[in-house]
Image (cartoon, rainbow, N blue to C red):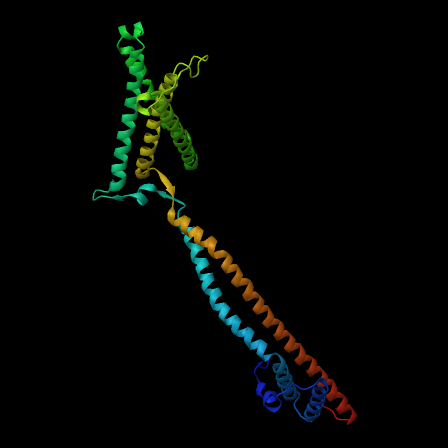
Length: 337
């Protein structure tokens, strides 16, 4: 097949304006007449192909070359994009979705033991100390209220109010261990969020009741006996109840927070691999760009195929026309070929 650039200068140099259809047909007829006496048909066919290619280039060379250059540039971008996409796919396949949490958050000492981060070490100690303080204060609060009630059996059996006051720290630890019934990390996080939210709301309620109950602090007071009268309640009763709940749940919150730190360094605990998540996110963000390049490249390739097919069809049409014309001339001249 003749190159689309062959004989491009033949017409562009001789005529600056494209020929009309009538002049083009006349030029074609004259060209066929000149080729009739060419002895070798293959040589004549090649000449027709070159002639038609030059005609085609006159009208389509600029579009063809521009499309080809765009395709070449886009192929470079597409190949780079495909390489990146393949790298993401390979990395995702080779990377574990979950990994030992200790390898991410900590390190190893010389003996191969898990080494905690300094920040986590001190934060864990503070949280654990706060949790113990919260449940101890809660137990002391229960003990003080039981002894303050001056119930005879409590006064006689000193161990009874102590054991009853121990129910608060036991309950606090029990609430903390409720996280173990959840299978997924998302469920544990949701439980912790609900626990933190409830504790925060109770702290706000406690602060309001505390301010309303102590006139020496607020500078004014209310009739404690009048509040919730008729239902057997009072500001003091409400304050004690809310304070016990705050101490109970505050201890649980601090225990849960401490556990969330310590569990990160447990050898058997696994978490989502950040490298895997980052690679998946990068692959997802890259995919639309890759698809756009692919579609644009497909359109340019399709246009080049269409132009090539149009040129080849035009060449075949003129060769068939020339062969028929040559046959008619030879028949008229009674000439065998």
